[in-house]
Length: 293
Image 1 (cartoon, rainbow, N blue to C red):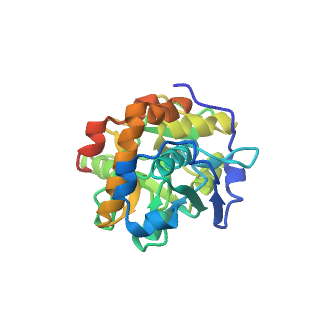
Image 2: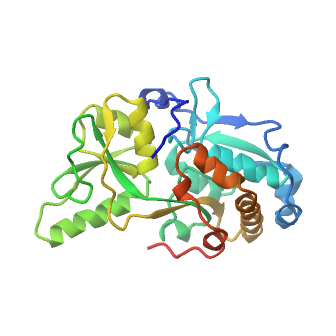
């Protein structure tokens, strides 16, 4: 898998982003042709505001991060900018802690949230989602420890980010270990991905379960980390744009904008630019997503 290595990102740099930072990309959406049906579907308040308020965490390359030049970059950043343009809106990004993204959208502070957030049954109790990306899990480990198989984690210790979808997956794997008479998987929890990478680099935990695209990208920029080649069996996970529960108007508007991006190829280009074209969804998958497991 090819990974875009132009903007290198380390855990230590990411750890500097402790405070929320508001980022507006003026004019970035204006290059896109407005999809009138999508714009007409927007809630009146959103259309009148002219802004798509987006919660994210810029510590998750290649989905959201800051380049060495300090520019906001990533798959999610480009996608929201693309969709905002098709809706006739300007994207506005607020850099916050990952566990605060879904609650921030649910309580109305933000219109949408992105951070390669997995669509889970638990999250769907408090928010709605528009699917946009599929990926499988791999294992990020300390350099030289790539002999660990993600499908044989019984008795190992995983480093996990609080609020992440990986927690539920890890708990299921640990339960399966116990059921088969093997030792459970131990967990170490950290408040954000930057702290998780740093802890793993310093020898805390045997590995960090993550989307393979993310893991390979991180390993490219961190000499202390590496990505194993194995992929967790039956681990395909769908990520979605977080939308407030019941805000069907905004979800419909975003869906129409995303379908337009699929049709004109601009959506696929974003994924290809970051080396993950296989994660693209079809219009049918966007319209009729499978229920989360």
